[in-house]
Image (cartoon, rainbow, N blue to C red):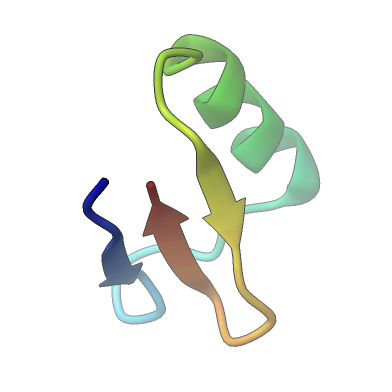
Length: 42
């Protein structure tokens, strides 16, 4: 399985609620948010 790391810091600062909604909307993906604000998709 491939892992993709996106640094969203320059364009978006997701709140916990926004990240939760992103996860619900994309339930077929495994999403994680790092402490540095990186969106990890695996």
